[in-house]
Length: 574
Image (cartoon, rainbow, N blue to C red; front, side, top):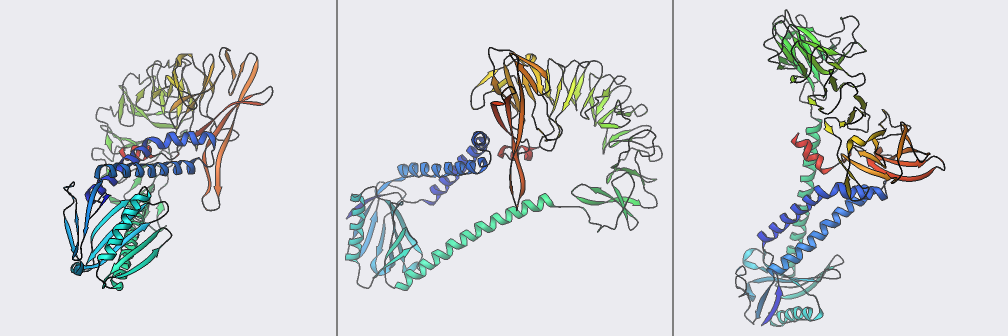
């Protein structure tokens, strides 16, 4: 009789533990990825992504180790082996999950002892029976922490060899560098067949996993690239000023990234594309989605049921109306006054603004009515398509920026190819980033935070429309500190504290402290390869003392469109 400490591998429990490991790791991945990458970027921009992935996978293996310890603590037990000339009897009174088992020698096809050397202090016993077509009927794993425990297992194997019939043949196989298989078989070929079947099974599992990954990737690529429209093989003819195309006496609408879609009940003879090219002193709109026949008015391939084709007018930017009804795209604006409804034009250029309109009662953003705007006074800002105002109030799209003084408000447009379309609106006292007030908390470069008073801030620098010679996020200053708004993390970060000295803003991108001039420099951080081309990760902003050109502080900012696990879920929800 020999007793050995082991932990039987219960399939359900192992499965649950694997699920727990994956859930915890994916949760950690979701919450830690951005933060850990942020700190790696502070030290090395070029290898930050690689180091972050290494860190997260190291965390994954640490979780496996942790759950391995927990599993062993929960399920470790003592198995009693009673070896007789007739059979091997195994029992475990302390565990209800382990039922007593008996294996008679004449029923045994093979007994295998797998020894994992070096970094794996494990031994595993497997038994195969003849009456199950040489399928595995028993397996248990032992971990030896010292030589004494190893000697107990060696003693068990010696007892098995001693008591086993001479018909069982002994063999040793080396598999890889770290595993040896000691086996007693009634037929050496049986052990070899089983070993080969295990290898095939492993390859099948690996192949199935790789195939599943490939299928998922192909499915994602197919969905992202899929065009559910019709290909016209470049045989279509454009209808000037619109997205409509004619081909073989049929009319189609071209949708970006989706292909061409047939317009019902429309032919080249009865269809008219509506655009603004014929109106004097108005900038042309090249991509109208509105057209009509004598029976119907269309927005793309949708019929606008309540519009009379005979009296329909196209106002631009997907607005259409007749004498009674108004539509934005295919949505009717139910309370609009059709007689006085018109698009809001740019105050300087005779062009449309995206996407504002008004009647005698109301101002609209797309099909949403905006309260607190006077239609007679409503107009767009000179340099932005996303804002509209009257004498008192300012709106960003459908959101009212309540604290702004409309008479003093300026719009700083931050749109460029590395930005996420972030704009800044300010009247000199309050600041809005798109529809959101500027945060009232500033974070340290590495840790810590403190409250700020946004009304005490001044603009030091704004984004440029192109990244050369410099690319800046919005930079602010209060009496003593310089702050950068990090567009990716959507928070204010303190770049430098000049306390107790006072900051005096002199001009864009420049300020002085105690008559010492300071300015900002920026540098794009890129990696490039022959296969993937150039990839921009972000940029470093440096605060420079102009007197001696010394660097006072720096900050690395990721571009707003960088990858983030959170954005996958955000974009999915949107």
